[in-house]
Structures are given as C-alpha cells and as structure tokens.
Length: 291
Image (cartoon, rainbow, N blue to C red; front, top):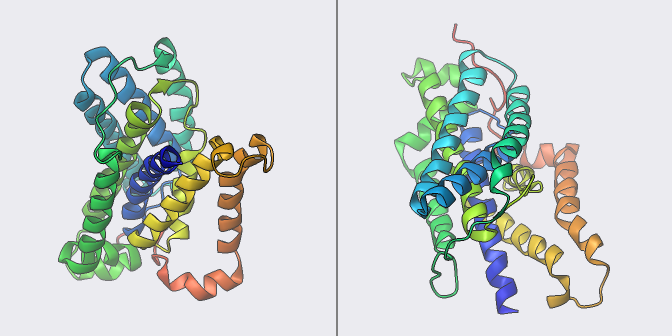
C-alpha cells in the first residue's frame, strides 16, 4: 500500500509541473493545447541525452531546453503572427508525436542507469513540485510581476496603455511554461517510468491541460487536482492493491480519461461558465492586435 501512494505522488508531481507550465501561459492570455507534444519532446530528448552521457542533470536540462524552444515557437506563431492558438498547439502535439517516435526508436528499452535517490521514500521532484506551486502562487498573487502577467491576460489593451509590454510578457510566460512542460516530460522518462517506448506518455499532457481548467487557474486547487489524478492513474495500473476483484483492470485504465472528459463537459455547461467564468483570464486564446 505504501508503494501505491508513493507512486501516486510521483505521478501527481508530473501532472503538477506540466499543468503549472500551462497555467502560467494561460494567465498571460495564451492557450497551448500542445502540452502532450512538449512533454513528449522533453521526455524523449531527456532520455536520449541522459542515456548517451550517463548524466541525469544533462538529461533534465535537455528536457527543459527543448520545452523552452517549443514555447518560443508557439509564442512566435500565436503572439507575433497572431495565429490561432489552438491550431498552433495541435501542430506542436502532432509534430512531437511523429518526430519523437523517429528520434527515440533506436533507444527503445530501459534507461539502464541507477535510479535517482529518494528522500523519505519520496522522489525529490515531489518537493520540487510543491515548491513550484508556492512560488507560482506568490508571484502571481503578491508581486508586481504577477500583476503584469494577470493584466495582459485580462485586458492587454489596458495593460499596454499602462506601460506593460504585452508581447514580451506573454513571450516569457509561454517560454517558461514550455520549460516546465519539458521538465515534466523528462521527469516521466528519467524517474517515474525510465523505459522509452512509442507514445509512452499515453495522454498525460491532455490530463495536465484539463487540470488547469479544473483548477480555475488557482495553483493550490491545481495541486489538489494533480493529487487526485495521480491516485486515479496509479489505481488504473494497480487496482488490485486497493480494490482487489473490483472491475477489470481494463475498466480501471479508462477511469482517469473518463474523469477528464467529465471535467471538460462540466466546464462547457452554462452553470460552470456563470459560476466560475470570472476565474478565466478574459483574453485567453485571443490574439492581441496593438492599435
């Protein structure tokens, strides 16, 4: 049972960090539905670099770097070219799905390195995730930088008149968000499940995306949702440890995605938009055309 909860926390850490990256971008008004693609790149390049060099740090830096580069790419299409943010994000996902399959195929199999040491039976990344939640909440809620980020996400025209550079602020938010997504992917492939295989993330990026909406753009609610989905994911893999003999394991494998679908359906209702619509950044997904 202890192993079940430890693995659940490990899974929730990945959801937390990836979703936090998306939350930062969305608070500035930029939507990136390509979280899965960024995580795939971070996981694959992190795995390749770590295995090739025998160095975990270089693997994680590679994941962060490719995530930042993809964030820059998404920023260019969405902010500079004023393109459709959903189309750009889907393009990143499809690009990541195809290219990582080609790049990672020669490395199929286990990482072949000693596991990263744990602290109190917990991955060090769990504590990193908690720290990032606190820092993000503090920056967004208690600092002038957070006020600028929230301003460009709510009303970029007013923010620009107030002297805030909307383009630069959004660029940095999306790039930092991409770096966190890439890091989350690297944590998956180097710590949680250090075995590379074709499309091995299996929808984690889409769950992280749904968690941002589920959280109403609040970092602490996001953490709670990540813990819930971490438990649900681990339950889908090892239901016999908690509920032996209850349903087939194939039914349990559908539970995280079913819950994600239910969350998205609830968000689409008039009740949700009326009750929680104020939490959504007003300019989310809308290109800013400077007059």
